[in-house]
Length: 181
Length: 393
Image (cartoon, rainbow over all chains, first blue to last red; front, side, top):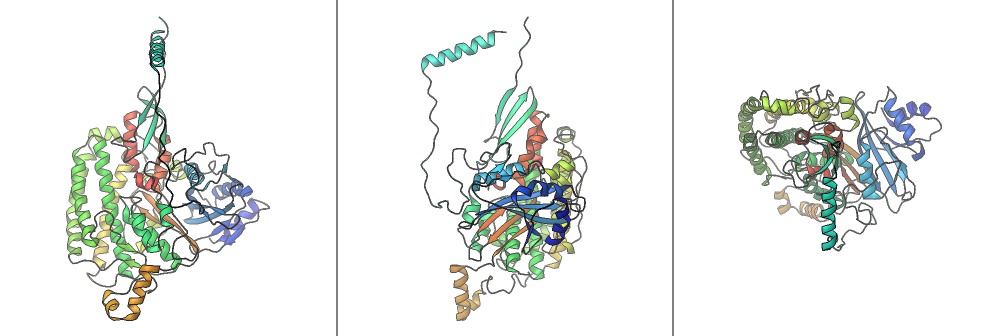
């Protein structure tokens, strides 16, 4: 199935959506407006003629200084029909993309990775934390304006400092807790 | 007497735990021996390969991507090379395609052997590790013969292969293929009906086909749950459609089913390797004839001005790839290894992204181990065959 054929199937299901077929060398590519993403993905998964039951891969690309600078890319796979589809959603630092975790649970960590690497916010994501970089890292490394050859000061956590009185009080509290019942 | 107070216990497993296959950290919430919840923490092996790739020329990325999934190195570079070749619009000669198939299948055998050795080691069959490594040594010797490097040969290049097959390659591969099926029988003799092994694996870490697909576990895990999705059959690449082989599946979806699927996959790989080595002539063409991408032969570099110029152009400036993007999946040892490449028409990639089957497997790990025993966590991690280099990239 090429992109126009998939859009023909999708358009009546998600009414009033301006899909846009893009040129590609491998398989169908469709641009989806962010506000219709969830409805589109649900239709792609649940329509028997399409049956895109696997979110094979999800990533983003930064086209800085173009505006909008990001494209979030979804690679879908329909195992029953042996077809692949690429969805693209344009995003910026300000405009959030809705999470598709409700449709494919596999999106959870992939969206976390995109947040970590690009700083794209996913609306409705229950646990949008960094995935690969340390939690206290500054910046989003895969952005094109992220400096490449920098040296960051070594970050260490401060040693835990407990005075002797506190230490003894802790022990005592623990002992009381264990003997209470 | 007052009622006994009970509470759950939080146990930290890893990142330096012998059975977390690298540096995976799991925080387990235990009720006695039963796992109530597990939360994996990853990123300890993140080396920014995708960011580094954006600073390198197209051909310099090959050694980088091989270091992602270090056990299935050449399925990474195969996916990357195929992806760039798709953007360039290159077609490979038949001999190159057959050699690539052979290499990919030998890589699968090598990776599955490490999985078999470590997985059974963790379940108590310690001697399996030594048997598996013994056979893998022969595969590493073949790699060394090919490219002088045992782990990351970088033998697959954009536009073909690094050079022609070395002398003695056919003998080495045939010797391995003659020896290996009997060794596989030995492995199965040790494990498949072993009561201890069965008790540790049957009914453990069960995942249904729908869940496996929804979590993106396409590969041996989904095939052990009843799906027959295999990239080699569904979206044939580099000539897999001309080979005769089966896709092993099972329906139980537990650790033992994944073991059986991978063991039978090894037998199928041997079948493919035999067909491939018969088709490959000992010497012949090893790259396509596109002079933009493939360096000219050395004898011409020394005698012809144009060839010398082309040689320097390729190695100093690199080649350019038409603007656009492509995603090419290959069936790696752990499942679908895909590469997504974006080009802006320059001599460096704009974006390189590898689909990491291990990342998907670890993401789904909590659902697989929940409600099981803490000892089963080890069995489930082993049967997911995760490689942290692939997961963290």
